[in-house]
Length: 130
Image (cartoon, rainbow, N blue to C red; front, side):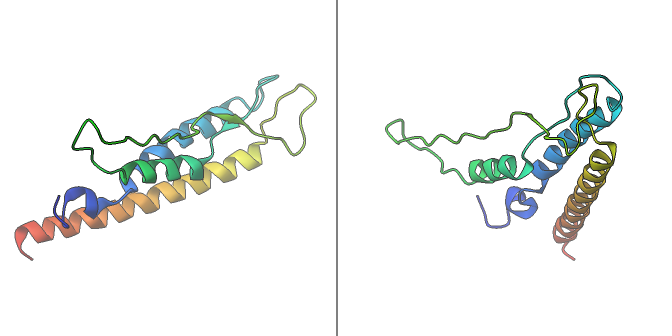
């Protein structure tokens, strides 16, 4: 692959956007069930999943069946959130915490989108010879 390849130009931002989109769904589900008795708020460790994705993107190509293959484990399972103050009905959703996390996630999604948009504009300019 050349140094100016498509994958090198975009970096890990496409995977980051997919992770942010998946996390937005989970956080929105938490908010939607804020009044559901015994509902447990869930989330995943974004940093751990991102590290797994970056390691996976840096794997070496195997050119022979006799080469050793590395295995990368990512802990992408949903985890339950520990509430600061659990409700009497067993619900662990704190609406303020969930809204804050949702907003932060949306801002990070938009930042990655802006980066990708700039990258595509740069690639378009390079193709046109500008």
